[in-house]
Image (cartoon, rainbow over all chains, first blue to last red; front, top):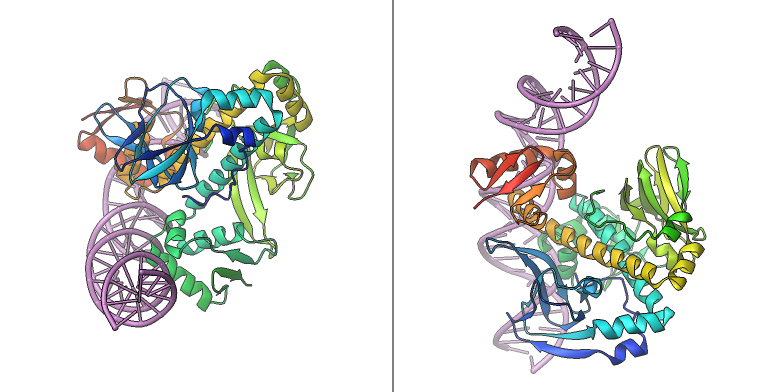
Amino acid sequence: MGSEAVAREWLSPAVRAVRVERMLKAGEALFLQGHRTTGLYEVVRGKLRLVRVDHAGREAVLHVAEAGDTFAEASLFSPTYRCDAIATADSVVAFYPKGALLGEFQRNPKAVQAFMAMLARQVMSLRSRLEQRNIHSARDRVWHYLALNAGADGRTVALIGTLKDLAAELGLTHEVLYRTLANMAADGDIERLKGTIKLLG
Amino acid sequence: MGSEAVAREWLSPAVRAVRVERMLKAGEALFLQGHRTTGLYEVVRGKLRLVRVDHAGREAVLHVAEAGDTFAEASLFSPTYRCDAIATADSVVAFYPKGALLGEFQRNPKAVQAFMAMLARQVMSLRSRLEQRNIHSARDRVWHYLALNAGADGRTVALIGTLKDLAAELGLTHEVLYRTLANMAADGDIERLKGTIKLLG
DNA sequence: CGGCGTTTTGAGAGAGCTCAACATCGGTGG
DNA sequence: CCACCGATGTTGAGCTCTCTCAAAACGCCG
């Protein structure tokens, strides 16, 4: 989940200046549903669970934010948080106060543009990942990922983390991913190199 | 796919004024990868496929936009389109010229805010739908959907389209959805009414 | 070297998918 | 008013594919 190809260059110097870091112990709540919104966050280290709790106390997970992810962007435009944010591991988050951000957005057109562009790219990225999950066959899903993440030459895919991480992003078990890659290589559809995969055919 | 709970109130009167409708025959291309961006679109009627075509001519679907969906938002911040938009059925799209939108955004802070808020809400919605797809069990996935879409009372879910549509949104076959709902009703977890589902327990 | 996490391969079971038949509902036209 | 038609809704049976549990090889770092 933490592998958004969506970079975070929306941080103008002025925005970066208002950033405040905060540490959280595992299980600690950052904010709760109904609380007044104070700003948005970025995960520096650790992992947070965004959950909505229904009347019966059951939780529905909205998102799991990991290192590098931002969350609660919508809090900028809403008076109260609409879910709970709970650290599932000891974590560090960077806080960006709502007022400072909105002020900067009003003063600096570049900052708004950068932030909007970041959101638009994230929407695009999320839509394609959702589309990917509509592909049932493991092989086709892996191919979809590879084709979409090929570099400039259209034939080389750089692997960022471990294959286990990739399996999680693809919504497959790591065993299935290993087997699928092995089969694709055996069939001559891909070539597996150190840290990269080359598309053939 | 077309059931974003994300309303489109980002349309200020000034924005609505620059809207231009265009008709497309099935199979017709609206824009192609590499073309200069002219603006973003909204599907009024029909269905469009956003695809990226790799060097070997294989397509990878990025998104399927249906009535009510907007797409190519990122074109506002990019010089060229990064995928093809092809109508898969006779369609009507509304076109919002990039220049007019960006101009309006500069003049009218309300318009920027509304547009950013819409994007932020869409990011939230997409993230939760992606999280939903991580749930393997059909029953848990359906429950996740119901819990997240319950009305103000937290117990009543209004069904917008057909159950077939819902099955597609959940990434299940309609048969499995029917069976799952029947089981949940038999177990007393839900009550099925006309056009709505009531959560029990 | 020893330990830990990743990578790999094996075998089995379960859940959802597919194909198929049928019921139900809403609209259309005779 | 009723027969017809298409799409939605429903249930059944079998199959495939992925998930799960298990075990072992590999690589990396102290």
